[in-house]
Picture 1 (cartoon, rainbow, N blue to C red):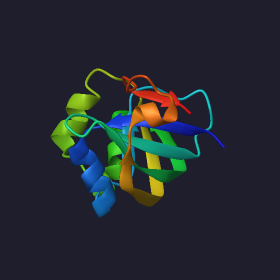
Picture 2 (picture 1 turned 45 degrees about the vertical axis):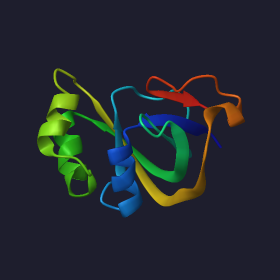
Picture 3 (picture 1 turned 60 degrees about the vertical axis):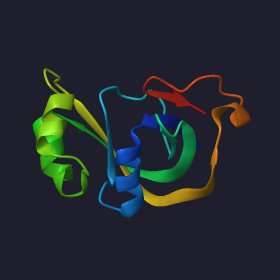
Length: 122
């Protein structure tokens, strides 16, 4: 099992917890098979707040990924298009079994010195 720590804007994490966002989008393809995503909420929260199981990883053109994910993207088409502007590929992690931690965790409690720029393997 490979876990990945992702830095995510608190607004997007809230949409994940509400169930309106079932895909997490990235520009970089992972080299390992990821089974679980750990959510690090960026400023102003700055804590690990939950996790989810990865059920599928979609890789295709941004247009095709939007067609497959838009209903549960949790973001606007404009935001999606700006994020993938001038990119040939888009990556979407389909998530399920979302767990919100009752008590957020500090990075230091896991021996992590700083938040990942995009992601890091755990």
